[in-house]
Image 1 (cartoon, rainbow, N blue to C red):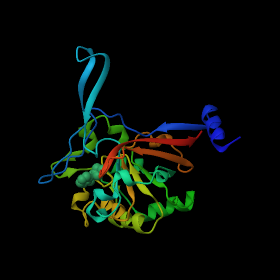
Image 2: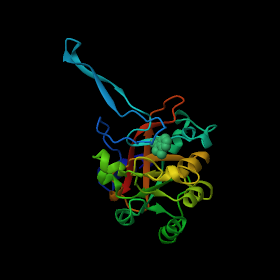
Image 3: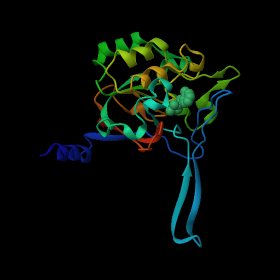
Image 4: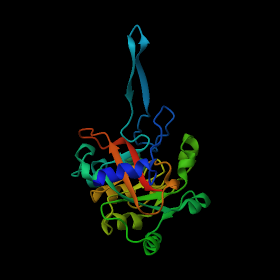
Length: 257
Ligand code: 23J
Ligand code: MN
């Protein structure tokens, strides 16, 4: 049997499962809220063109509008000033859009501390248990934040001092970008950086180091709890927006059952 026939048989037989890591896209999809003086993204909107009516008797269709960084989405290197000479989202090689992935679970720690930051030592400890981070693959960071994704207020978790959502420490972001062979980092939160990361040095270190190293980001992932720590293949499908800094993306995981 050919390798693809074996894959199809494994999917049909339930040996390999497809897990959808994508959040639904609607007017209610939470969006990031940057503090003044920064400009903010628009949310997702549908505008009806016709619905089996005088405007189009046999067809239903919509226009949609949205920021590039809404919902489950892909951050391309050009999104950040450190990656300004790097790839836009349309230039990401298709061969990188199917890649291995591993999952590090810090949902317990993040439940206790919403400002929790992943550290280098914890990733090293994960590696001694599960093996090295995948070359050319994703590090998926489970925080439990997907359980808040249906509610903008709970998802952003802001008070008078700003948003409180988990992320990655400055040292860990630099290390992941410069010292590990990963393709990118995928998170459950509204951005790859912590809610408090505007106050870090440098600000938004995950964006600054990862995108500056030509690596990628994936945000607002769902269903990471359904994945094993290793052995997953991720299929990531951002729209090829020419000159785009990112795009809403469908993200599917192939996982052994
Ligand atoms: C712009 C500025 C800061 C951040 C972001 C965008 C994102 O999180 C994003 O979606 O890339 S933190
Ligand atoms: Mn983004």
